[in-house]
Amino acid sequence: MGSKKKAERTKYELAPGPDVDLRRKVVRDKRGRRITQDYADRAVADVRAKIGRGRPSLTGQAARSPQVTFRLPPDLRAKVEARAKREGKRVSDVAREALEQYLAS
Image (cartoon, rainbow, N blue to C red; front, side, top):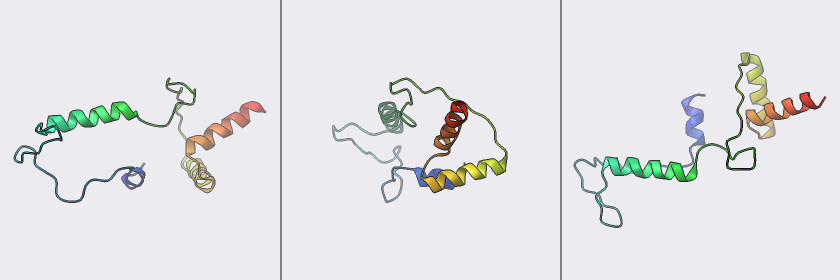
């Protein structure tokens, strides 16, 4: 997936203005602790751990959903992407539905 598509999905925005060089400028959090690059890295890791990654599990539990990966010819990939876009779904949703229909027949 291209970087343009990834950028479109980003759900956060950076604060306006220039970056701060934490080695040269003293910046403190609301408790008065100095914010260093290590502090910022730990804070980001903590937030990522709390919110998790990806979509909710299809199992309905906290367990990860089993994953299947396979390759498609470019023309089939383009067709499924177009269908997903038309239906307002993700490619994985369309593929899952198609596999469910195939196995039900």
